[in-house]
Image 1 (tube, rainbow, N blue to C red):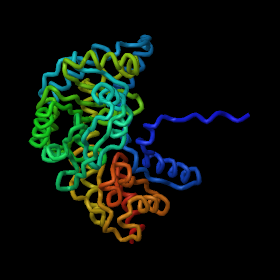
Image 2: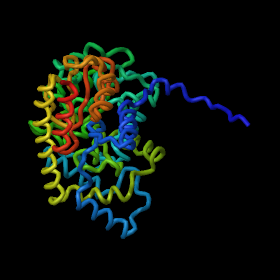
Image 3: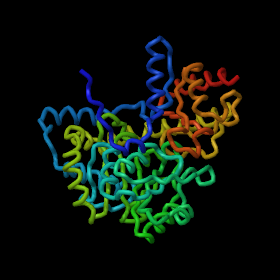
Image 4: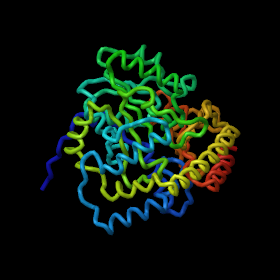
Length: 393
């Protein structure tokens, strides 16, 4: 009996496949065949949850706090996040504006559900994390990708907002520091962008999930510049809790009821165990661990950037946050130079190192750039650089 072939929603045509995951799949096949592969593709810390967080999760399960929580999150965690903004950023954020979510992805889905109208245009830089434009597409909006090169730090600028804001534009979706580039928006530029958006009565969604991993200057949250922004953060990156699927939003007071209504319907709540465990993230013991790990990430960045440059992989803007390097591959000594997709395939199959082509992050830098994640050990980084040296020689 033939099964009926069901039609999919037309919006899927606006959502591309994720090349990062395709390369990871190929790498897994090579490993099953006996190859030793060094993974510098997926943006996941090699550190796992800190011991105090593990102990807190165990205690929460023993106490039986595993049932639904309120859609906005447990009060104690919302208070702890508000306190974190005060101690880390010097910002007074009322706990009532904090919404605990099922990861930063859940936070971005909620933000787009609340703010993106059908047909609405949202400005973002090219390159950007691919899922950001797909969150917009999921709610029948349109992500307008603005080419942003080294001169703009691969970020959107206030001048570009002025130039590209059109009749259907409703807001901007930005990330600072950014995936894939590791670059942040400088504070004066961010302030100017927010001023232009407010002038046009638009919304600004700021992905700040890598702010805890800022290396060269104290991070500046958009919340210190404008109360009307919606900021997204996460326990995945700085707090090393990727699989726990826990994040948060800070939203304007007037939007809290709307976010709560949508969260109740789409998610009910974030994981109860993860929420109780995350309370331990803000203890002095855990924060000391995160500071040590941040210093290690910075040490890796300071090692890998000059190593890549020496191989002909040019880094036009030194990353000041996250754990990525966005390197220009046009001038490397290889037949696939200037074709990032072919080059990363060759690096994987010939050198046994996973790196990601710019293809995922937007057409402007698709061919010339590759993203390298240094969320792996120094030993792996050194071995990968040796393999690349032989590969490119």
